Picture 1 (spheres, rainbow, N blue to C red):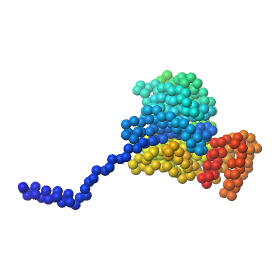
Picture 2 (cartoon, one colour):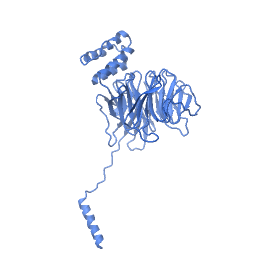
Picture 3 (spheres, one colour):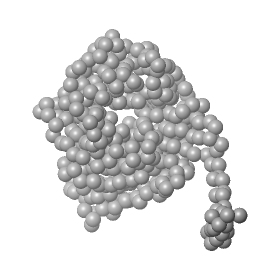
Length: 422
């Protein structure tokens, strides 16, 4: 044996003696993984819908799941499961009787109370077809739209037949204007406002209200249809830019707010009914609630990273927030199953939280309750004077003692939830 080979053998023996023995890691346990991507509240606040996917323990199959939960108890009302990639974007009809959900290229319409499947239709005319990214109902409930690929299609809500087709480059989001006749369309070319009866016959159009430098990922009207909130895609044409949040005012024809979210693309966006707060849900898994007047971050929660479509939703009076999580947690991502001031539903996959447990928020909701109360006589005590720390117990007792039909159930539930979180 040569001198070189002898030294080499000695080095190998020393290494074997001193270095730790490498033992193969045990195989990871096979578990069923559930992802809730999007949520929505029924108009009366009595139900929460949550959609996503479930992967089998062996990873060989995936099914889309829909949960509808009774609120505020969180009890399961009904669920649906279909083989396929996922369900997304649950949207209750304005009267609360139907629930539309996207199932990749399809839209399924369910009876909201019972889960009866009322209708299924193909929702993308592109070749090849792509998955539906957005569903939105018109305020009168006679129409709904779907956004997929390069198309926005308006459907008759009674016959489920297509009425109009808008082709707009790559479309990420679209929404009917509340109380108006416009559709806002956002995507690779910024935002366009179009008459809801327009039919481009599959031809592209180029009407912008925002500079096309923005790649719009999500948009949302305020409750009165006078302002439009939007978020931008973080991967712009030239360089990476953190997702931005903007608010466009139609009367001023200008942006009145523009701020960096310091996150990856915020694909999820919702506006509280009093227009004071927005929630964004971004690709890095952060759910964040913002005060629009000050730009202050009010609350932040952990959701699912690296998945789309995602969307969190405010309750009808803005006191609570619903969002989805990953169950069980992925490596390095602890599941947020018990957020402070909130509750975990559907085995922890759906979170209900109170993002702003403050007297200011409580009084703002009380104002909305008084506006919508069955009579001014019953609503007046809600706003006779602002609630303070000293008067909070009396206020809660008053709300609990009101007749069931005195104030909207959704409002009562939000008031009690915020009061309980204080």
